[in-house]
Length: 191
Image (cartoon, rainbow, N blue to C red):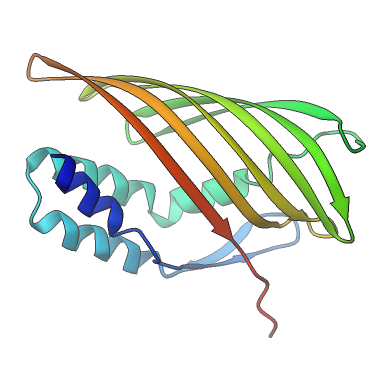
């Protein structure tokens, strides 16, 4: 199973897609996610039934609707008042998709502002449940991001996530520990 999961997750590496984001943070269009989903489908072709279930979940996570929601939520990390370097604020977000209910409690801190770039650091506690197969997970994530101050658009994101998950399938309980490292960068395309 571990090799199948590794091959499936490897299919996500270096698969770019494009977003057109309006000044209010709404996503106007998405292109390229079909290639991400195609890569997942190819990886699943040789996988066993459990891994194919994971691929189905990942394909849903990379649907246009879910990515649109994620990106629009990515503008939901700003405080509702003026802040200064060193100030912190808390945001709690709940997401439900594909039978997974997830709660993130995040503390953000403004680390620095240079020219038109703000650097934020953050720590999150994550809790989640899934109905079928029955699963629970808890974890933490820590990261940093840089944001263009005039537009609020994310420039870079680096996050390290650690989670402990417990699954029950066909009467067998499994404990899975995962660590993921994610890096995202964006750039504005001039017309």
